[in-house]
Amino acid sequence: MLEVGCRPMVQTYTPIVQGYCREGRVDEAKELMSTMESAGCPPNVVTYNVLIRALCDAARFDEVRQVLMDSRTKDWKPSTVTYNTFMNGLCKKGMAKEALEQLDVMLGEGLDPTDFTLSILLNCLSHDKRIHDAVCLLERNTSLKCYAGVVAYNTVMSRLGEMGHWMGVLKLLTDMIKRGVMPNTRTFNIVIRSLCFRRKFSIAKSLASNQGFAANVVTYNTLIYFVFYYSRKLSEVKDLIFDMTAVRIAPDEVTYTIIVDGLCRDGFFDTATSYFLESLEIGLSRDLFAVLTNRL
Image (cartoon, rainbow, N blue to C red):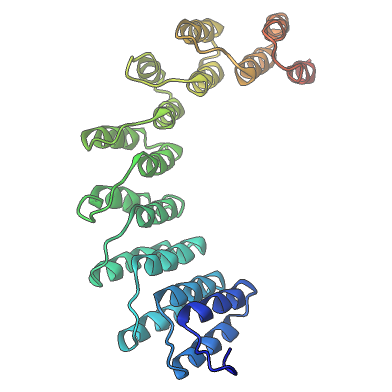
């Protein structure tokens, strides 16, 4: 191309930089970008985003910071994608604190975070034992000019539930509804599971039977599992099966596995066999037989 006097453009160089980065040849990618500058074809934000992703994959975060710092004296400006890439890379390496700090840097540069920015940080904070920061970030989302949707709330609520903070789960459920974010079935199942973890069965069953609650077979399987394993009352399990069939939710293989396993564990082998035969009658898999025989 150069031999025939055709001057390459940045769009010509960037795929080559990307190719180097994909092969892990980051230093060669950086050398090519230096060549671009010398040739009067400086890399643009897209090129730098490619490099930053590769540096993050290699955990070369100090170099990323230097690249961002150098942008102030070069002919390119980091974008929201640039910071999202950096934050995502930090999060993948468990560096939640550093990722959160980049949000403030990003805001200082006059860039508005996106839904993806929020998703990156919430996932990271929720799994890095910084759940308080995740909740605070959710509460800040309107001031950040980005929208926290149902997936964002589900992420934080799920982690709160796993940690036993059922009151926090209910508070976020209330908050999201007040903000016009409609819960989905997964949201409600997270709420049910968090209540069951804390043995708040009466509240959980009351919610499941509420007309505004989008219950499914997972909802009832969760209730059956916890009620059976904590109260060990078959009568309550039968009531739950009656309730689910009344709203046209059919028990599935998981439902029968929970019941058969629980009955066998408590020594009620005849009743367990009856439920196993019932599952066959409605066309469920014979794999449940393994649960029954393993308990005998």
